[in-house]
Length: 586
Image (cartoon, rainbow, N blue to C red):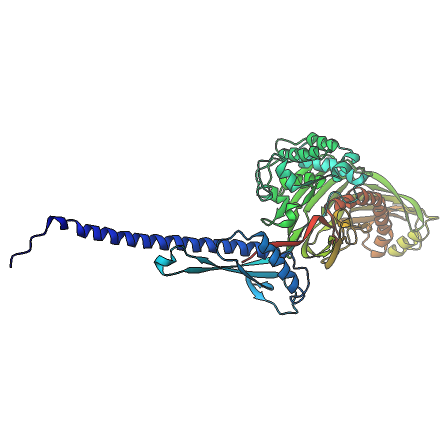
């Protein structure tokens, strides 16, 4: 059958129909895209709203129970919503719940529990612009957020600001000079001026010129020269009007060989830690901390400690920094440690004569060889864990830490020398000593006075009393704890000097029998005790002035500077702990 001939007016009709259909499909797709975009925007708004409200509500977690906080949370949520109403969609529907974080998850608490976290849910509905086209008039959007209330504090173990006195000031110049590879000659007044000054981390960021924009960036800064850090702190002091202290910092000489440091080795804090944002660092602690950090793991020779030690000459001193001190910022559970250093001092006491009394025989001369003296000071290490920050209506009033020993140190003074005795025992007036010799010889009398010769090595020791371990909870009151430490132990006191023989002890007696000289080597214990004990006692007593001077001029000041005592450590709070810090955790 022949096909119908298409009229000319019908040409292109199919294309028009297809074009209209395609346009309708594209309009429908575009409508879906626009409405889905609106819903996604609403979800983002709900997440932002839930985050903000959760943080606002968490600031009200103040130790009350969940039931007692109900009205407070409702009011706080209403105010927070009023401040953040610029969201897409209907008026948001908010809800809250209180509980705790356990293993990273929010767990709702009972009415009588004390919550430390708040969960907020935010829901809304958004009208779709093309509901008439797509057949879907609106869409829901909901999100949740969890915020936790955290107590945060900065603290340190040991501080160079504690009881800064003349004995400590005397040590600071040679110690810091050795650590900074330079010669330092600051007065005690200058050190006290630095100890009275503080700089905040925020000021170091904003004024110090270290090229960072936030406190977190400052704490991550590495490869910083010690000089650049001192100049940055000086700029902050300039801004405070403390020009004298600022110029002191600028004038501290720093050797070219002094290694660069990382700021985080002086002050360690978790990112965004609230207490670190407001932390005030003592300037003297900043100086000494930087010097110790720069030399961690190194042994530094200190030519002259600048202290007087009676009788000791030709001294050499080596300071080894095992671990440097640092300020630590964080919440409950944060741990910090004392510095750990070892100081070894060696010297000599010139040869001299010593007079002793031996069993009724007075002023017996004993020749003492040159004495080699070694002083080893290892102050060990203590560790502290932040247990709590306690607060009142005015703010933080104390921090509580668990203080325990980590590495037990000790202090030992050791001296070694030779002692020599050559004495003639008179036949008259020598009392018991002559009788002991006769008894050992089995004789009733001698024609000639006997002679005693003694050669022996001696070792003298004085050490700190042993305190092996300690573990105690200490409370640091505020604001006093910023400058006055809590937690000190018994103090480091050297025990009395004791002397013992070392090596070979040789005693001989030369006596006359019927006009002849007979040489006898006696190994009798009674005569050893009679002759040796007065010598040991006399030599030990002669060393006591040196031990006393070491205690007062070196050991006590050094232990105070490092904040470590036997059986404890000095715990300082650093301004200012945070009672109601908050953070998003979910």
